[in-house]
Image (cartoon, rainbow, N blue to C red):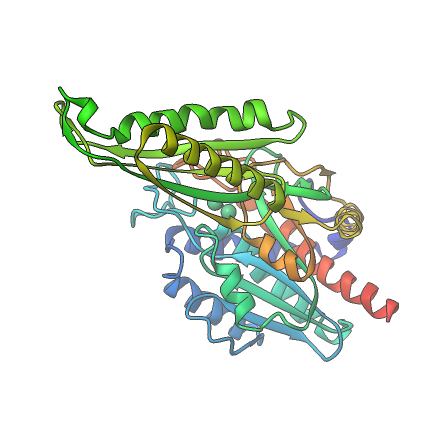
Length: 393
Ligand SMILES: [Zn+2]
Ligand SMILES: [Zn+2]
């Protein structure tokens, strides 16, 4: 660890910290070279379990098939730290000596998140007798498909948790810089699918058909006005068609057309309003074109919405440790951490890893030098929030 990344108030223990950094870097390289997709994180889970058990950390019986929840501390108030553990179906194109070779890749930094949590577990375990309550450490499966958080919540493992904190790497922030903001920091994410049932026939006789391609193109065209003409320019919103299918040759008007896509906005209510507008566009085109149109939409994840008091607490804690802080990078990406925040007060913060390429890119690299910073901040947040909550009671 160099001086810039070493936490200030741990300098007296710098030997301990450089050992932690070295251990974490070794773990990180193993996890990076063994990525697994959501709900298939078998080896990853087994390795996390082994490392925690070696450190004497208790693993809870949650019934989760992959991922796990551990607990450190005694009775009383409970707070949670959460990381995700799944990878992406991307063939890695970095030149790292520990690059993945199995066709999947930790291109979103989840290997970094889980390794920092192992570091936090080790630090919290050393201070277990001083904790004013308990910390639950959530190693969550399947974040990329945004349904892992729902299964962790359904297990009941977090029913007694008062506050929850999670982290995500930010590629374009300097190593170890902490980003934290209050309010919506990740978008509410919705998806939609449109199927048009027309009437097929000879392309020379369109009047005898109900052309689903023309209907679909009218929907796609009209949908572009929902954000540009019907949404305030002060409220960011995205509506993207991402997949279109219809027909298979040049002289037949097909029977069906299909399209799907996504909507991203700062809150669930606005997402519902945009979905409703898109549904009305489909209704209108159905009327004009005489083809039957099925419209399906769903909320994939609400917005990550940080509690303002707790965001301030995270910022202060990071500054007390000597880390540089700034606002989170706003993103229209989604995060299923939002599901926890619907039930538990919490904050999702960022840590800089100075990657040469963005997340979900085959050349994404999270700089492991920030691992002990992340571990130190996670453990300090847990310990201090327990202290604050106990003094309130
Ligand atoms: Zn991701
Ligand atoms: Zn991610």
